[in-house]
Length: 403
Image (cartoon, rainbow, N blue to C red):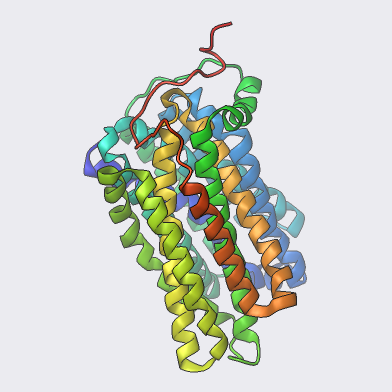
């Protein structure tokens, strides 16, 4: 793949992921504009996320059944139309319905990963996947800032309408830029839906990668869920803007993930995973100093969350390289299983983090992060005899297994 193609795919990831996150910044504007309560307006964000989860399960496996170019073009065209409908919604129920459709169809980033893995040599997959992940991170951060600023100037509908134009323009670009690919599967849709579960059951390397990412993402979600409570408490007495400023430091991961990808290409995913898990343990130790309050505590929180973000994102690069190597014919189905497990881990981490916070405070949350990382690190020492260092091989899918 040329650098131009990598850049286009990174922008594709940024736009797709940004569509999930930009509504978070304009919730109060939606509430004021549609004359509803802030809690009611928050349902738009929830609907988008629910739609996205459904899209990963219902649509991403089709990446193995349909040509990538036409599939991406259709997805972004549908996303653009759904965003347009959201921007023109006359009332909250219509906006929630449109937001659900936006989430359902904006799964392009999960299609681009398997596409890119099939277009590059095995010894370049890490670097390319790291660059795509940088695009996703940039889209998440910029979408929140952009939509909040634009919404303050022109109202809550403006971010939706601008995002619709971006999605439709990108659909046109992808129609000409993405190379033609041949689908790897001929399975019917119902069989494709069942395949991620079968792969989880039969492929130990997929389960291992899912376990790593689910545990680290759980700790990551626990920290970010409880950080706002810590900053609003007596040790700091700061509001939501302080959380936003600390989150912006996470933009440094956009530089780190391509570097992590090159290390994966050179040394394989296992050593990079182990270093990332150890980094999570170190970040948990640094984050405990956040209980001190003041400038020192705030500096510890900033450094600890930056290290945690970098370790989580870099570990994701290593995990995805390992996952895509499990079976070259089923990369989209593998990605469905992997990303679903990661998101389930994140949701569980948020839930568990709040309960630990209520009983043990910030110290308890940091101990939870350390325990999750330690569990993953112990699992990392039990590498299967059949080592897999990022090289691809064939595995029997449901359509190729002998009857």
